[in-house]
Length: 124
Image: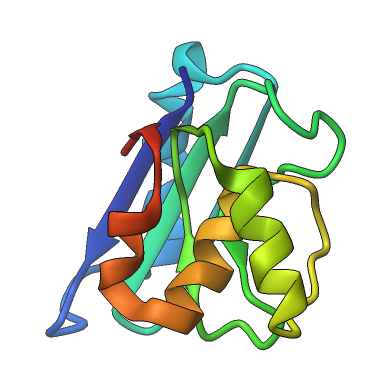
């Protein structure tokens, strides 16, 4: 099971998020020893300690859409991701990976928070 973490700092009063996230991810190393990653914006940051299961070569997280406006760090499995992926490709979405994670990003672009109603699986 992967480890996920994040920080939200609306006041931007905390130390630089880029400084805090690596220690947070390192504390989760036992949850995801295969790889780790972080992303930090102005008021939020995400971290991921990865246990590789699907798309072993291309499933790095946090992961974004093409223009970096939607970001995700995720753990779990979406059982119907392949059907959703085909639907999203037909609508013009372009995928860089074969992961269920990227399907969530593009489905969010289409449907917003209601996208979770379409996901069949277990995830956080």
